[in-house]
Image (cartoon, rainbow, N blue to C red; front, side, top):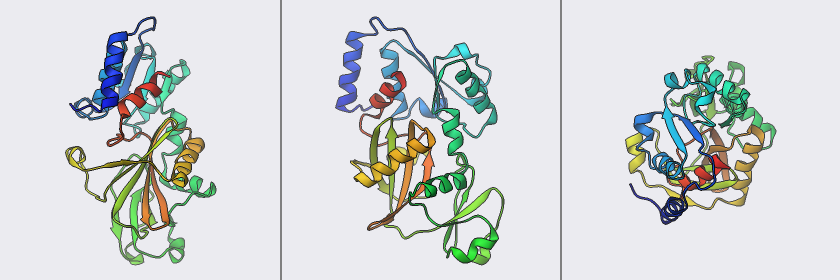
Length: 277
Protein backbone atom coordinates (compact mmCIF):
# COMPACT_ATOMS: atom_id res chain seq x y z
CA UNK A 1 0.00 0.00 0.00
CA UNK A 2 1.38 3.43 -0.95
CA UNK A 3 2.32 5.81 1.84
CA UNK A 4 3.13 9.50 1.57
CA UNK A 5 6.61 10.61 2.63
CA UNK A 6 5.13 12.08 5.83
CA UNK A 7 3.48 8.80 6.80
CA UNK A 8 6.67 6.84 6.07
CA UNK A 9 8.76 9.15 8.26
CA UNK A 10 6.18 8.97 11.05
CA UNK A 11 6.08 5.17 10.76
CA UNK A 12 9.89 4.80 10.81
CA UNK A 13 10.32 7.11 13.81
CA UNK A 14 7.72 5.33 15.88
CA UNK A 15 9.08 1.94 14.89
CA UNK A 16 12.54 3.00 16.14
CA UNK A 17 11.38 4.82 19.26
CA UNK A 18 8.58 2.39 20.06
CA UNK A 19 6.12 2.96 22.85
CA UNK A 20 8.78 3.62 25.47
CA UNK A 21 7.26 4.77 28.74
CA UNK A 22 3.71 4.95 27.42
CA UNK A 23 0.76 2.76 28.30
CA UNK A 24 -0.86 0.66 25.62
CA UNK A 25 -4.19 2.11 24.49
CA UNK A 26 -7.02 -0.15 23.38
CA UNK A 27 -8.71 1.51 20.40
CA UNK A 28 -11.98 0.12 19.07
CA UNK A 29 -13.30 1.37 15.73
CA UNK A 30 -16.85 0.64 14.67
CA UNK A 31 -16.89 -0.02 10.95
CA UNK A 32 -16.97 -2.59 8.16
CA UNK A 33 -13.93 -4.85 8.73
CA UNK A 34 -13.64 -6.22 5.17
CA UNK A 35 -13.84 -2.72 3.68
CA UNK A 36 -11.95 -0.61 6.18
CA UNK A 37 -9.00 -3.00 6.56
CA UNK A 38 -8.12 -2.28 2.91
CA UNK A 39 -9.08 1.38 3.04
CA UNK A 40 -6.29 3.78 1.94
CA UNK A 41 -6.66 5.84 5.13
CA UNK A 42 -7.85 3.46 7.85
CA UNK A 43 -5.49 0.56 7.10
CA UNK A 44 -2.38 2.79 7.40
CA UNK A 45 -3.93 4.35 10.52
CA UNK A 46 -4.28 0.94 12.15
CA UNK A 47 -0.73 0.01 11.15
CA UNK A 48 0.65 3.23 12.67
CA UNK A 49 -1.23 2.72 15.93
CA UNK A 50 -0.12 -0.91 16.20
CA UNK A 51 3.53 -0.04 15.57
CA UNK A 52 3.36 2.48 18.40
CA UNK A 53 2.40 -0.37 20.72
CA UNK A 54 -1.33 0.30 20.86
CA UNK A 55 -4.08 -2.23 20.21
CA UNK A 56 -6.44 -1.13 17.44
CA UNK A 57 -9.45 -3.31 16.64
CA UNK A 58 -12.31 -2.95 14.18
CA UNK A 59 -15.73 -4.49 14.67
CA UNK A 60 -19.23 -4.31 13.20
CA UNK A 61 -22.36 -3.20 15.01
CA UNK A 62 -23.43 -6.65 16.22
CA UNK A 63 -19.98 -7.24 17.71
CA UNK A 64 -19.83 -3.76 19.25
CA UNK A 65 -23.10 -3.93 21.18
CA UNK A 66 -21.95 -6.97 23.19
CA UNK A 67 -18.58 -5.46 24.15
CA UNK A 68 -17.91 -4.60 27.77
CA UNK A 69 -16.74 -1.07 28.56
CA UNK A 70 -13.37 -2.60 29.48
CA UNK A 71 -12.86 -3.62 25.84
CA UNK A 72 -11.56 -0.18 24.82
CA UNK A 73 -10.01 3.00 26.14
CA UNK A 74 -11.05 4.91 23.01
CA UNK A 75 -14.04 4.21 20.75
CA UNK A 76 -14.17 5.52 17.18
CA UNK A 77 -17.70 5.69 15.77
CA UNK A 78 -16.97 5.52 12.05
CA UNK A 79 -20.25 3.89 10.97
CA UNK A 80 -23.60 2.49 12.14
CA UNK A 81 -24.70 5.83 13.60
CA UNK A 82 -28.28 4.96 12.62
CA UNK A 83 -28.33 1.89 14.90
CA UNK A 84 -29.88 2.84 18.28
CA UNK A 85 -28.09 -0.10 19.91
CA UNK A 86 -24.75 1.37 18.85
CA UNK A 87 -25.55 4.79 20.28
CA UNK A 88 -26.76 3.22 23.54
CA UNK A 89 -23.56 1.18 23.87
CA UNK A 90 -21.41 4.22 23.00
CA UNK A 91 -23.14 6.11 25.82
CA UNK A 92 -22.13 3.31 28.19
CA UNK A 93 -18.51 3.87 27.20
CA UNK A 94 -18.92 7.62 27.71
CA UNK A 95 -20.50 7.07 31.13
CA UNK A 96 -17.51 4.92 32.07
CA UNK A 97 -15.18 7.82 31.23
CA UNK A 98 -13.97 6.43 27.91
CA UNK A 99 -13.33 8.76 25.00
CA UNK A 100 -15.74 8.39 22.07
CA UNK A 101 -14.97 9.99 18.68
CA UNK A 102 -17.29 11.59 17.70
CA UNK A 103 -19.31 11.93 20.88
CA UNK A 104 -22.90 10.71 20.87
CA UNK A 105 -24.09 14.29 21.47
CA UNK A 106 -22.17 15.50 18.41
CA UNK A 107 -23.61 12.69 16.28
CA UNK A 108 -27.12 13.55 17.47
CA UNK A 109 -26.54 17.19 16.51
CA UNK A 110 -26.32 16.23 12.82
CA UNK A 111 -28.59 13.17 12.79
CA UNK A 112 -31.52 15.03 11.19
CA UNK A 113 -30.59 16.96 8.05
CA UNK A 114 -33.47 19.42 8.40
CA UNK A 115 -32.51 20.21 11.98
CA UNK A 116 -28.88 20.60 10.86
CA UNK A 117 -29.88 22.98 8.05
CA UNK A 118 -31.90 25.04 10.52
CA UNK A 119 -28.97 25.19 12.94
CA UNK A 120 -26.56 26.31 10.21
CA UNK A 121 -29.03 28.86 8.87
CA UNK A 122 -29.48 30.31 12.37
CA UNK A 123 -25.69 30.73 12.54
CA UNK A 124 -25.74 32.65 9.22
CA UNK A 125 -24.09 29.84 7.28
CA UNK A 126 -25.27 29.35 3.67
CA UNK A 127 -27.64 26.42 3.06
CA UNK A 128 -29.92 25.94 0.03
CA UNK A 129 -33.61 26.83 0.38
CA UNK A 130 -35.62 23.77 1.40
CA UNK A 131 -39.15 22.41 1.32
CA UNK A 132 -40.29 20.31 4.26
CA UNK A 133 -44.08 20.72 4.15
CA UNK A 134 -46.54 21.20 1.30
CA UNK A 135 -47.45 24.77 2.23
CA UNK A 136 -43.85 25.93 1.62
CA UNK A 137 -43.67 24.93 -2.06
CA UNK A 138 -44.57 28.40 -3.33
CA UNK A 139 -41.49 29.86 -1.61
CA UNK A 140 -38.86 27.53 -3.13
CA UNK A 141 -38.73 27.08 -6.89
CA UNK A 142 -37.81 23.77 -8.59
CA UNK A 143 -35.78 21.79 -9.42
CA UNK A 144 -35.22 19.97 -6.12
CA UNK A 145 -33.04 17.28 -4.60
CA UNK A 146 -35.02 14.80 -2.52
CA UNK A 147 -32.92 13.77 0.48
CA UNK A 148 -33.51 11.55 3.52
CA UNK A 149 -33.84 13.51 6.74
CA UNK A 150 -31.78 10.78 8.40
CA UNK A 151 -28.16 11.87 7.92
CA UNK A 152 -26.96 8.29 7.82
CA UNK A 153 -28.99 7.44 4.71
CA UNK A 154 -27.62 8.62 1.38
CA UNK A 155 -30.11 7.84 -1.39
CA UNK A 156 -31.06 11.02 -3.25
CA UNK A 157 -33.20 11.73 -6.31
CA UNK A 158 -33.97 14.74 -8.45
CA UNK A 159 -37.43 16.27 -8.85
CA UNK A 160 -38.16 18.73 -11.65
CA UNK A 161 -41.69 19.91 -10.80
CA UNK A 162 -43.69 20.92 -7.74
CA UNK A 163 -46.44 18.48 -8.78
CA UNK A 164 -44.00 15.58 -8.35
CA UNK A 165 -43.17 16.34 -4.71
CA UNK A 166 -44.14 13.57 -2.30
CA UNK A 167 -44.21 14.63 1.33
CA UNK A 168 -43.07 11.54 3.17
CA UNK A 169 -42.01 12.21 6.78
CA UNK A 170 -38.65 10.59 6.10
CA UNK A 171 -37.67 13.00 3.31
CA UNK A 172 -37.36 16.67 2.50
CA UNK A 173 -36.33 18.71 -0.54
CA UNK A 174 -33.39 21.04 -1.06
CA UNK A 175 -33.46 23.42 -3.97
CA UNK A 176 -30.97 22.30 -6.62
CA UNK A 177 -28.63 25.29 -6.71
CA UNK A 178 -26.58 26.20 -9.81
CA UNK A 179 -23.22 24.44 -9.70
CA UNK A 180 -20.11 23.93 -11.81
CA UNK A 181 -20.08 20.13 -11.73
CA UNK A 182 -17.32 19.85 -9.13
CA UNK A 183 -17.83 18.31 -5.70
CA UNK A 184 -16.04 20.18 -2.93
CA UNK A 185 -15.54 18.59 0.45
CA UNK A 186 -14.11 20.27 3.51
CA UNK A 187 -12.51 17.56 5.62
CA UNK A 188 -11.80 18.43 9.25
CA UNK A 189 -9.49 16.54 11.61
CA UNK A 190 -9.32 18.42 14.90
CA UNK A 191 -8.28 21.95 13.95
CA UNK A 192 -6.98 21.01 10.49
CA UNK A 193 -9.24 21.83 7.51
CA UNK A 194 -8.63 20.46 4.00
CA UNK A 195 -10.40 21.05 0.71
CA UNK A 196 -10.89 18.02 -1.52
CA UNK A 197 -12.25 18.41 -5.04
CA UNK A 198 -13.47 15.75 -7.46
CA UNK A 199 -15.74 15.55 -10.52
CA UNK A 200 -19.38 15.52 -9.41
CA UNK A 201 -21.02 12.10 -9.40
CA UNK A 202 -24.14 10.74 -7.78
CA UNK A 203 -23.51 7.01 -8.11
CA UNK A 204 -20.75 5.95 -5.74
CA UNK A 205 -19.35 2.73 -4.37
CA UNK A 206 -16.14 1.91 -2.55
CA UNK A 207 -14.31 0.51 -5.59
CA UNK A 208 -15.11 3.61 -7.63
CA UNK A 209 -13.93 5.89 -4.83
CA UNK A 210 -10.60 4.08 -4.81
CA UNK A 211 -10.09 4.92 -8.49
CA UNK A 212 -11.37 8.48 -8.67
CA UNK A 213 -9.00 11.44 -8.94
CA UNK A 214 -9.11 13.82 -5.99
CA UNK A 215 -7.18 17.02 -5.40
CA UNK A 216 -6.22 18.21 -1.90
CA UNK A 217 -6.09 22.00 -1.66
CA UNK A 218 -5.89 24.72 0.95
CA UNK A 219 -9.44 26.04 1.43
CA UNK A 220 -10.37 29.72 1.13
CA UNK A 221 -10.45 31.40 4.52
CA UNK A 222 -14.23 31.85 4.36
CA UNK A 223 -14.77 28.13 3.82
CA UNK A 224 -12.30 27.32 6.59
CA UNK A 225 -14.33 29.57 8.88
CA UNK A 226 -17.55 27.79 7.87
CA UNK A 227 -16.05 24.39 8.68
CA UNK A 228 -14.68 25.58 12.01
CA UNK A 229 -18.04 27.09 12.96
CA UNK A 230 -19.80 23.80 12.24
CA UNK A 231 -17.43 22.06 14.64
CA UNK A 232 -18.22 24.65 17.31
CA UNK A 233 -21.97 24.27 16.77
CA UNK A 234 -22.03 20.47 16.78
CA UNK A 235 -19.10 19.34 18.90
CA UNK A 236 -17.77 17.16 16.07
CA UNK A 237 -14.02 16.45 16.14
CA UNK A 238 -13.72 14.74 12.76
CA UNK A 239 -16.21 15.51 10.02
CA UNK A 240 -16.84 16.50 6.43
CA UNK A 241 -18.76 19.41 4.93
CA UNK A 242 -20.08 19.11 1.38
CA UNK A 243 -20.25 22.29 -0.73
CA UNK A 244 -21.83 22.96 -4.12
CA UNK A 245 -22.12 26.12 -6.18
CA UNK A 246 -20.29 28.23 -8.69
CA UNK A 247 -18.49 31.57 -8.94
CA UNK A 248 -18.96 33.25 -5.55
CA UNK A 249 -22.20 31.50 -4.57
CA UNK A 250 -21.57 28.30 -2.59
CA UNK A 251 -23.83 26.40 -0.22
CA UNK A 252 -23.40 23.78 2.48
CA UNK A 253 -25.47 20.78 1.44
CA UNK A 254 -24.41 18.13 3.97
CA UNK A 255 -22.41 17.47 7.13
CA UNK A 256 -20.83 14.01 7.45
CA UNK A 257 -19.89 13.02 11.02
CA UNK A 258 -17.02 10.73 9.96
CA UNK A 259 -15.95 10.68 6.28
CA UNK A 260 -13.20 8.50 4.82
CA UNK A 261 -10.73 11.40 4.27
CA UNK A 262 -9.62 9.97 0.93
CA UNK A 263 -7.29 12.45 -0.74
CA UNK A 264 -6.16 14.17 2.47
CA UNK A 265 -2.37 14.15 2.61
CA UNK A 266 -1.12 12.37 5.75
CA UNK A 267 -4.66 11.68 7.00
CA UNK A 268 -3.50 8.56 8.92
CA UNK A 269 -0.95 10.62 10.86
CA UNK A 270 -3.43 13.37 11.66
CA UNK A 271 -6.08 10.90 12.77
CA UNK A 272 -3.57 9.01 14.94
CA UNK A 273 -2.52 12.24 16.64
CA UNK A 274 -6.14 13.21 17.27
CA UNK A 275 -7.03 9.78 18.64
CA UNK A 276 -4.08 9.69 21.04
CA UNK A 277 -4.09 13.32 22.15
